[in-house]
Image (cartoon, rainbow, N blue to C red; front, side, top):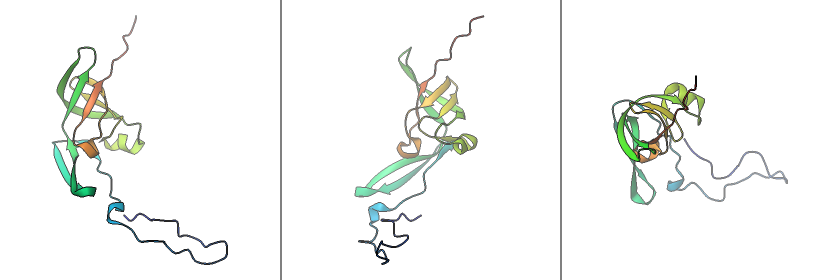
Length: 133
């Protein structure tokens, strides 16, 4: 997946060709996104700019769920992805990304970390409104 430096399509106003001022650099390489899904934990480690490494989830089984009322963090098993506002296709495929609603053993939670880049799933427990009848 190559990313262009400049828009070289078409021609200049004078009718001449557009020529790139320079080629691509190693740090400009584009990669396919690492989309974490629910399953037994698998981690991918990638080399990034500056000879650093970035760990990412391929599949995630557990989430650190924060209960803001009780001020406690518990490790809960992820059951399924219920909603993903980032992408409707992600919702259908069960991709865990930031902002995704997940169903855990502790209850419904919203993901606040980036599992495809951080290799951790942190989520905040969502309060369900009490029904009055």
